[in-house]
Length: 187
Image 1 (tube, rainbow, N blue to C red):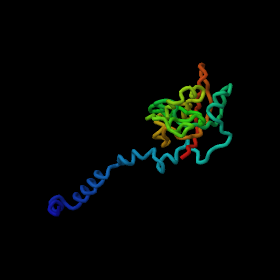
Image 2: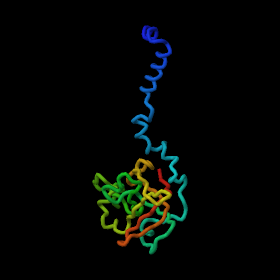
Image 3: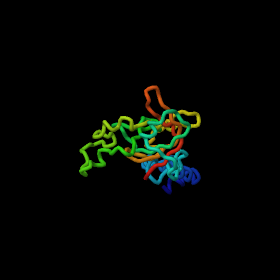
């Protein structure tokens, strides 16, 4: 290395060493840092959609579905799930199930859990799901659904209990969607 500096000039050698050091370090987050974006204790804590404390005036999914009209602000509590894939791919959206419905992993009155690989789909409670599920979509200032996976954006997972606040909209079939602007996540 000494001969290299001697032949090429010490300034060029220092610039080359500095450049190689920067190149090997990379200019962005490493693979492990990217994977941690949604993990507890990382960037999701500063998310503009997340509340630090659970809001008041909370109702359950079943009560929200029984409401007659669309409202500008509704705060609903539930658990993420209701189907094999409760997430909307590449969107900040997911299905929310009434917290009173037990997931397959919660066990039976006899204390035994069913042997379901995907307890968040409530496969043991399909009859109870009717009228106990709604869709949550996080929207920006223009009312458009945020184009980022909810799991990455918020660090959430299936069966996690959350409280969402937003406008309630009902479609012609009677399905309820919360156009959410805020969420509290039970950790």
